[in-house]
Image (cartoon, rainbow, N blue to C red):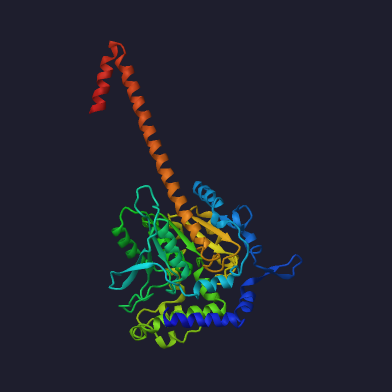
Length: 464
């Protein structure tokens, strides 16, 4: 574990042990003000009954108290059937891991452990920048299953959070996907997770240009394999921006977002509960500190490293540049992940928790109208899980990983059935057309000799 990772872990662990974390977060997230029955305000605790119940009217219940929010369609029925029989959603007795803050801290703070074997590739981009692709090559378990009938393993593109922190859950998802027959690859942005920053340009929050080149390269390496994509937390802004900009040309068969940040501008402006805000901000500063001299020609590094909030850090890094400064409004016009959401043509499953301490209550940061109106977007809302946690007792993986892979399998079966039905429909139309043509020929051939001239004329026009 790198020194900065240990420092971050010790900082957050100390906050939790000193008792400073839980009370403040409970006041910030655990309660919200609602209009009372007689005009008075009262507080309602978000414990899986409050905010989650606002989404429950007319929605589909699932095991474990989860809800599927989506627009009715054939694909929605297929996904609902798969989730109803999912063992990952079965309710389990509450344990010491059930608290939202503990789920979140275990996910972000605990060391990642041995992890999978990774083979790194550096991809040089059109502007001479570098991104990294970590291909998961091992350990390869015996009896590894394939994900499609053709025998080619599907490629699973994994996008970590926007801070560049490679978490336990990301590596756990890669190991589980490798066991299920996928070929996982982790995308790292410029300057993240050991990827060198060779030019003084970082990737903005929702700019998918680097991801487009990476997907093009992956398709070049595996042209016949299906491509699925998963993003974690704030990294979902990058995936959703890519799907919206590319539309039906995204090369992606299906996508999933774990605890996505969907209303990103409001999320930055409202701020996070202070321990998470300080932890993520510290991580960003430590990551970029090694490039301070390279960045000083483009940004005010003194102001950057003295930032007191994530918004101030983001605004200094991408808006108040020395070469091309822009306003905060212009920045989000180009980086809002939902700016082109109507162009997305890929099924997207978003897994969210009602007790998420980082994103906040779902009625504030989940655009439910998107899931009501867009047939490509599905929201799986659970009562508990924290932010990107969804943990169970060791050694079981996070239940969100199981659900995502079951969702991809359901998509594959649905599309295969659709292709089969289209093929049968085309063959039936061709067969019936042949029968009609053969019946016409037979009728004309047995017709009286007085109609020979008509038959000849028809044959001439048919063969002309």
